[in-house]
Every structure is written in structure tokens, then in C-alpha cells.
Image (cartoon, rainbow, N blue to C red; front, side, top):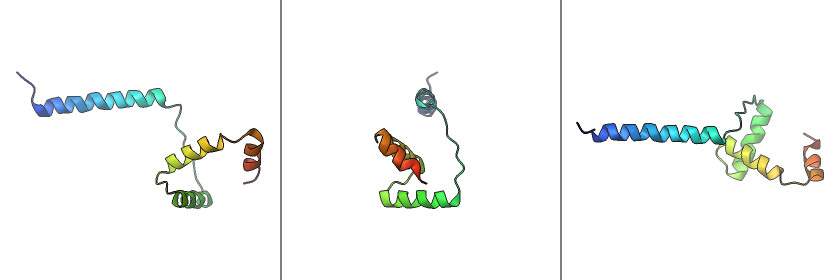
Length: 82
């Protein structure tokens, strides 16, 4: 008996989901869980608003990548004071 269109579609979604999970597993180094206090949350919200970045994870990723472009002296100077 032939499979119904709904069954074929459901199987395709399951295959696609598995592929996405495998892709994520290959790319993911680790998950970072972080407690954020109110003052830091306020600073994050301000930076998000000014930069127009909606997702906190996207903001943190961009910040890390951009900060890592600094030379060693500039990086130390940036992080010397909170």
C-alpha cells in the first residue's frame, strides 16, 4: 500500500529534524549557562537596544568575535576595569 502524503511529510520532517540535530551536535562546542544579575541584565538590554540586536545570544556572540579582533594590549585595556 502506498504511503499517504501526510505520512510522507511527517517522515520527511523527522529526517530533517534529525539532520538539524546532527548538524548542531557537530558545530556545538559547549553550552554556556550563566546567571546574570540585574545590573548586568540592564547593561545587556541597553546594548541590545542601541545596537538593534534582538537576541541576547546573538549579541554575546558578536561581542566575543569583535573583542577577539583587538590586539593583546587593547584587549587587556578593555577588560582591565569593569
